[in-house]
Length: 148
Image (cartoon, rainbow, N blue to C red; front, top):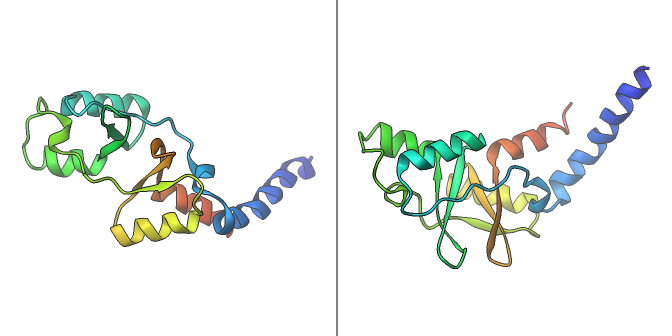
């Protein structure tokens, strides 16, 4: 019985370090991408993010290209701490331009971008269209798998 339990864990342990060094960022995109209209209220944005259990949402333009991102940090710092009305449009507090990376790029490039731009959410794109987000937490979980 212990072999049944430990075999998958040791297999996962062997593949995770390789993925961190050689994998593509598309391999890390898991949660569905939440998108908002720039005209959605701050309250609507927060409600949609909460319902989807995500810490960020992307605001695309009419062509589907991402124009901005709103994160839990934006809501805390730019709305709550600043005393801003939750009826204002989300575009008033979104971060723009958004930092993104093509889905085929290596994971280590995501780490480099996130560190150099001091961000915790990175948009992953496919053919210049939003595919999903990866977070610094995703990278920590992947990296920590190589130590346990």
